[in-house]
Structure formats: structure tokens, C-alpha cells
Length: 70
Image (cartoon, rainbow, N blue to C red; front, side):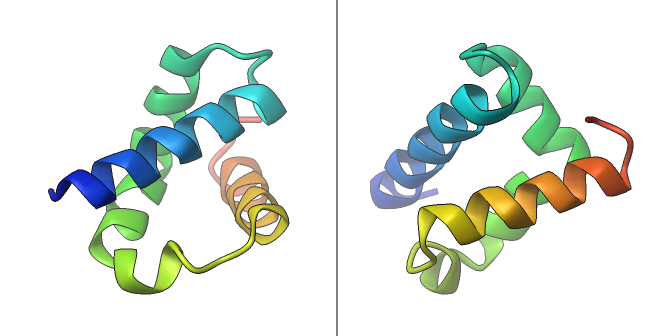
């Protein structure tokens, strides 16, 4: 993983933690890993890092619902 990809995923963790887990970054990281979002977003970094925050949070929320995380 490049440093740009890591910075992006840290940003995603922070935003997901704030939206879904009352700021708990550990819970957010674990949920991203369990849901497959982590692998999806890192494998397709060239596309995913261009998405807007609202779209990202909506997509992640739908994935979390689909796998029973939220």
C-alpha cells in the first residue's frame, strides 16, 4: 500500500467513525475490514479516491446494512 492509499484509508476511517460509530476509529476500521470495503477501496484506489464524501458514506452505509454491521 502506498502512502497516498494509506492516507486515503485513514481519512475514510475517520469519516466512517464519525458517521456510524460515534467517533470510534477502531470500530470503524474493524467494520470496514469485515464488510469488505477496505479491500474494495484499496484495490480500486484509483477510482474510489475520486468519489465524494456523501457518496462514500452512502455506499458504506448500504454495505454495512447488507452485512448486518449497522
